[in-house]
Image (tube, rainbow, N blue to C red; front, side, top):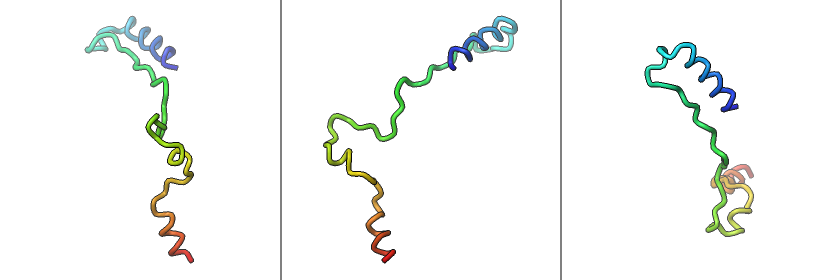
Length: 65
């Protein structure tokens, strides 16, 4: 997708270079890896696989009864 966008920007720059005051535009490539709460080597297996990480869950369950 980024390559297609870069091609479009290159064509626009070739046709109208005066519109680009900062020079030839470059598309930043998306990150190769995207993670939410990545597991690191220092994490122990129990914490990484403990299920729900919701600190108020026990309190909510106690109040629901």
